[in-house]
Length: 458
Ligand code: ARG
Image 1: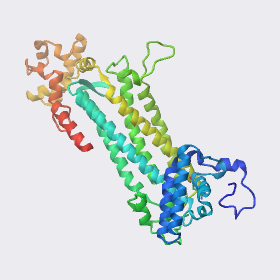
Image 2 (image 1 turned 90 degrees about the horizontal axis):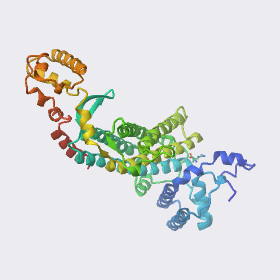
Image 3 (image 1 turned 135 degrees about the horizontal axis):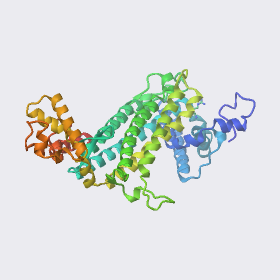
Image 4 (image 1 turned 60 degrees about the horizontal axis):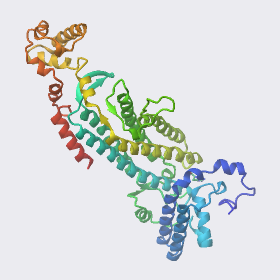
């Protein structure tokens, strides 16, 4: 078909360059299944409202399913002159049902149609992302449980601070990803609103039962205001905000994995199957997966900013600018899904070098706070204890020794309160197990936290 939907109004043919410039088929072809599902529900809605007959609706549905079959079989032909997925499907529908195809677009505009397609897509993808986040969370809980005894230095300012359980460190990420999951579930509620029936912007003269159609499409609600419905892209901005925050978390984790996999740290071994080598340096094993995830974070932020900027200052209602939303939206969704998928595959394969992490946790004066706490227990005010331990650290540094490597009489020269029971108090395992406040790193705490985490996930 070389005819346009608007041929009646125009006397000149559309310029070829204009067709190419305005076409969105390369992007919105990926929405075909939602467009067809939406059209099928619309046909049934038209019949339900008595606008077309039940037989007409069923022929249209049959034709739409035939078009779906062609698209899925790869035999469907796309062309810029048909502009978008809506026109492609309607055009091809005519080959199956003839002139009846011209009734499909009754009581509908491409404005409510694309809003519908985008929401159906967003709902599907949100469900997938929520499932993937559950997989990542489960993988983290499993890895934490399998390594419950592994000790490592906890850091602040990327300086060794206090010993923690590796499991505790992992479960910090569990919390981040669980919040991400909740953000996606929350934005889902506002995505789950059907815009169909808003038509171009003002609603339609046909007596459509919008709630009935919403039921057919599995929407929980219908939009309140037709002008808002055709021009609202909040659901995209919300999803991409959630995606961006999730990518922040993935990038932080990635950064740690890159550091940990370096010779300088040697805390973890990443599986060979998830690394690549160098074309010139034979010794190299590069942590490409976390590096790429870190890199892709910028891409998702860019997609969010693109849609925010696109929507900024747009007057009501639909504007063609909005056609530009889908590229960024789908790119962000694909990118996030790719990152979550590879992460949940990689996590179970990570091997922690527990000797290295444990050694790192027992060097660098990570027990200084605990020595101060020891003095407080013996009656010294904390500030005084802090200063006293500070002097001991300065001395030990000069001796190139750790605090627990100083002889008792040396330690006692800093405070008479110190006795031989200081040594166990300075041991890594005691330091960890004494941090029993809710949310702290004591092993008994972390074990319970993992149990609770699994319940919260279910
Ligand atoms: N391809 C358009 C989009 O993605 C569909 C809606 C077009 N509406 C219009 N009046 N030209 O936004």
